[in-house]
Length: 448
Image 1 (tube, one colour):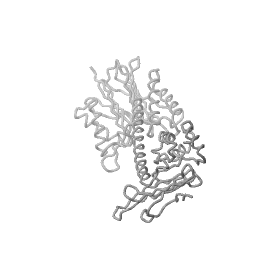
Image 2 (image 1 turned 90 degrees about the vertical axis):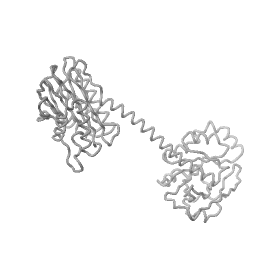
Image 3 (image 1 turned 135 degrees about the vertical axis):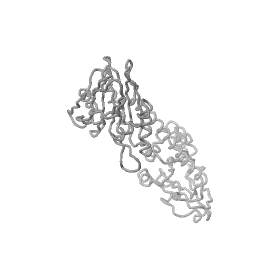
Image 4 (image 1 turned 30 degrees about the horizontal axis):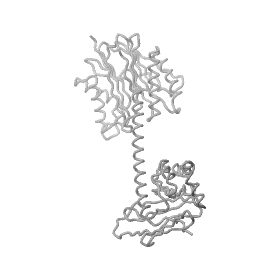
């Protein structure tokens, strides 16, 4: 009677001498193959030896695996399980490969012929245990072992997800050792390929979200100039939660907004897209100020994934003559205005309202602001002012931002150049990429 596989071999290949492989033949006889395994005394220590978990679906223990070596000449550790319950218990992180015996006990030549004739039709059912193993160990290499008569089922096993198959009648220590190394490397390559494809899909999804967060403004017919800059935080290469928009309504009023959903990730970005689209639709429908923000809060409360999510928002509506503006702040930093011959300053932000989603039935007062004939109005998210200055804990802040903008204005910068220089300097002062996302919008008007 064949000797079953030990649960964990501790003897070296040198101590065991010739390793004997027993396989149960189709007629009940036993064949023997020898595999010589020799480890050199000068071989370097193997810091992470390979471990093979054998799952034999045969309570009689018809399979015995020989002592085998890895590519460095070190012993490959063996474990065995008689069912999936044992396999799950033995499937520790140090297991590199699984050898699954698919062969069913065959009692007669007639049964063998019948099984061969129906192998293709029943392959899916017979591979149910393989599917369970793949679900149990999605990151492990899997080899399947079957008889040569079940070649179709072996090929189907690879299509289902196994890395390779072996025939019981041809199995020896050298072949198994090579198959294990191949399966482990192929699984690593498969995982790397999967991660690459997953990364590409995530990048495409993030790009779609960002297109929704950062749209093309609708300002046809307006004499205002529009510029914007966006830079994601270092923790997200492509995805950010900041959003902005600008539209001109039929009466000639230019409406602009900038906002920031708290938190990071696709859910928050998707919520930002919804809020931006809702803002554009409500603005084009004629809503403004407190009525607009109250409706946006209702949208946020319905669409947010949890009650802790909130959003800050800054909205301005610039009169058709370009000399006046209405300002509403919902927990957002106040915009910065600059005029010729005068230093840039923050617009008044007293009596601003809370962020959207914090207080039910909140109100957001609309403040009237005088702009004059020639001016620039900069809206921004807090990522610009929360960057650090040097290696200490001091942050740039709004006052530091105003000083920075005034230095760039004194150099004659405006429009795109002003925004680019400001974001670049904020990064330099921070000593590298900013932690949070940065979005900046600049509206400018030059009186004729």
